[in-house]
Image 1 (tube, rainbow, N blue to C red):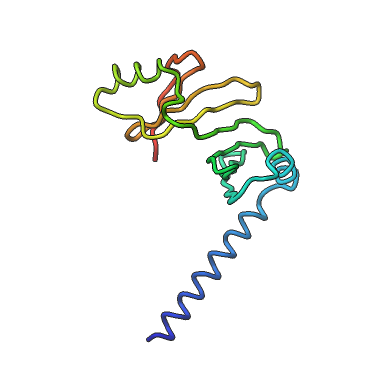
Image 2 (image 1 turned 180 degrees about the vertical axis):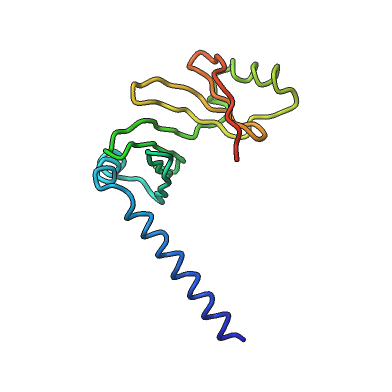
Length: 143
């Protein structure tokens, strides 16, 4: 019985490593090169395909970040985790008025390819997106 459990464990570990390697192989070379040149100190990078684009989640200087690139390696968006207290004050007022009793769980600053900054405030079950002046843009339901 122990041998069977050991063999099954080895099979699972091997298949998991192969799955990770095949995901890494699916990333276009131009994209890998662009990512590595822009984020050479990134640690624990995990790739995910989003439609025609690719998202890389990683740690940089102990800060959680993610980026979205197209297949040619063009940076489309960067998301940097920030302290909740770093959100503009207007966001707190909006949440208090429109989502009474709910607290912001996580926060991030997003910058698109044109340099436009927006903010993301996660509350129960959704991300709320705001512009630089704390104006509400949209809510995105979380899976």
